[in-house]
Length: 94
Image (cartoon, rainbow, N blue to C red; front, side, top):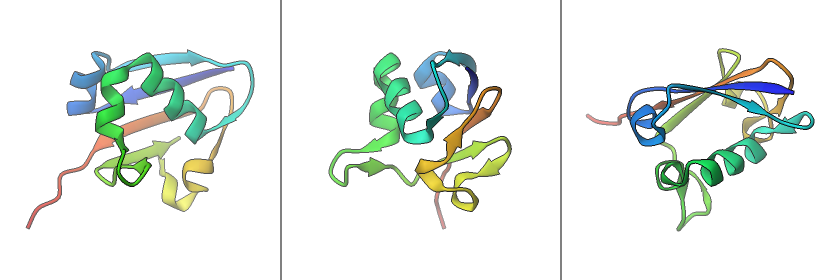
């Protein structure tokens, strides 16, 4: 199964890539893909994971096939062959 992953903005700089193709053995959930990405690109771990809370940082918008994961099944969204996952950094301010 092939999965396209895109990094936007500062995440592109951190990963050193704007787009990669992951080759996976089978369909998998988004959480597993994030674990693989942080293993393959260790610098992404600090940008994506809040170690104190043990969860994904709220400063990253994740899209699967153009839909924000909160309208899907969140981090448990099932990914299939040909899907595209996009990581977009979000700035908060007032």
